Length: 258
Image: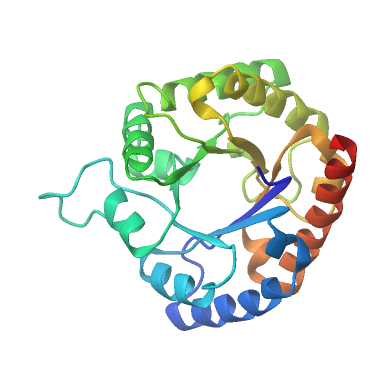
């Protein structure tokens, strides 16, 4: 299992050509990044569906994982406009982002829909990037109860397989600052305990998203397995600074495990 995980969602901020330029720029940098190349830092990107193929081409020959920002809960069939997990896997994607707060709020995705999408992704061999987080700011212990309930609901009847759990408190998404460090530690610890208690989730990780940026990994230390970046990563220099930070943390963890 990688020591540290760093992910980026591009949402729909980039047009096609800008996305291609970003992929090429980032790919050139990660090819020379020792921690990414060695696997000590696992790096993934979720672009739009139309950008998945050029992303796969740009990152070919690197360990970078590419995924979709959503996935159909259905198997292939008469579901106009959907993109199945089977097709994502067929073209080479390995991650499927599921349950983001925007999907829940703007498109009415329920816990039942999220669970169906997680199951579909796992059946196809994709790693679900499961987004979890409380809507309103509350005490850390209460937020932990909400997060663990969301996790258990999403994994109901799901096939065995690792998941990437992105803890993203809704009130911190797009905010000037991330959630307080101690708040994140409490919720991430509860999510980790729930995953560790489920033998079917071996190899899973818990990462933090929501105004994530430089310095956060260092501040959180061993509380999380990584970070999930948004607009901060639009600047490749800024993204590499977080990958460098992740590299330092990975070396420290490897030394501690020795």
